[in-house]
Amino acid sequence: MPTDLRRMHRTFTIRQLCLEFKCTPRALRFYEDKGLLAPARDGLNRVYSYKDRARLQLILQGKRVGLALAEIGEILDLYEVDDGGAQQAAKSLRKFRERIVALEQQKIDVDEQIELLKNGCDAMEKRLAVTRPDLLPRAADYDLMLRRRLDGVEHSEAK
Image 1: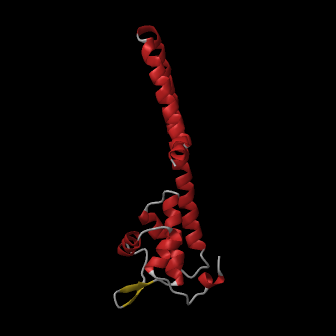
Image 2: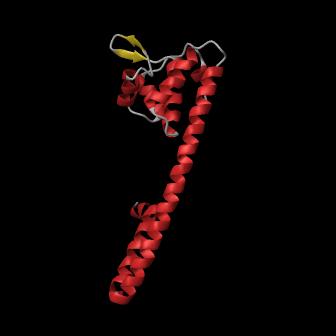
Image 3: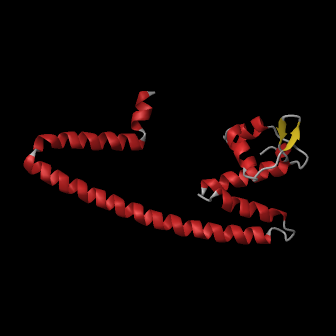
């Protein structure tokens, strides 16, 4: 990362932050409406500070791991507390651990759903083998097409 981005006096335009973080101006304005960002103004233009840039980075990281904007806001609000970031770290740790528990449960749920679907496919294939074996190759072709799509094979072949 260029050292210029780390200078405390450095400011950023909405365009610069959108390009850097691959987000839209609408998203930044939304975060501003929610009180998560508070850029200065130069006429009608928003001027983002080094602090705003750091907050945006934390907002996007929080969203990436599935935190709600309200939770992200709670964490960001603790940045101003003069304790060396201890309360912010403690709040973040609690939210992260809660998120891990939720994701682990979702993973269990997804694994169970996959198993149910596989069992359903097996049962239908057995039934079709007896009643309409002529339909089975189509099922296999469909399965192959889905696997290729998931693996990205179709996307690379189309280019």
